[in-house]
Amino acid sequence: MDGKQRILVVEDDHRLSGLIKEYLEGNEYEVGIESQGDRAPERILGEQPDLVILDLMLPGMDGLSVCRTVRSTYKGPILILTAREDDMDQVVGLELGADDYVKKPIEPRVLLARIRAILRRFQVNGSEMQGKGTNPSSDTLSFGALAINKSAHQVVLDEQVVDLTTTEYELLCLLADNGGEVLDRDTILESIRGISYDGLDRSADVCVSRLRKKLGDNSANPTRIKTIWGRGYLLVKDAW
Picture (cartoon, rainbow, N blue to C red):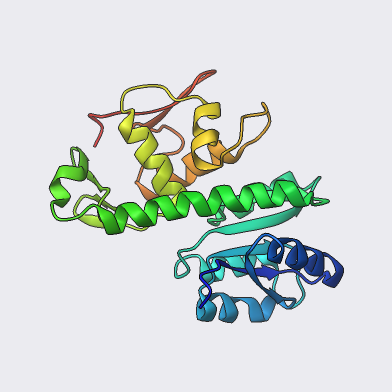
């Protein structure tokens, strides 16, 4: 093994997938290509790449269905490719557990920057899990029935383990580390996606909504992760 990180590109446009492969291999990644949506879940789960680049318009099975199929089992990052005008696809993809998206037409340097940012975050989380060790209680945040064990990368609510994607986990840790304080969208996006808020991006809102659902917070009237209109979000420390 040469130690290169492995990326699986699920894209039926052979010209585009070839360009992505050539560019990423030139930047020291190992790249595989899958052009058929219905074969993608088996390859993702079987190969367990370090990152998946997933187009949404695929033959056999669309990208959203692929994401839905593998997300509960595949723990690596998923970066979706979307058409510039398809804001709804971006939202749905994030709701299904994708970690980030890049709009077409793709600018290779932007794609590479997103890939590096995502993998950097995942490596940091992996290092935390392996390197903190022997006394998990010293690295646990607790708010009532909610416990976030950073050493084990585990969240427990009402004595039940909550299954979160890495992006959801990062968001919860960010909110918990700043419990009782309002975090604006710029701070959240910089943390979970490595980008600045442009006034239009909805990915922070989608991730908060997904996190609320998994933590049993009522999205219509949230009491645990509150929206502070015009400012951002805060985790209510005594609501658990």
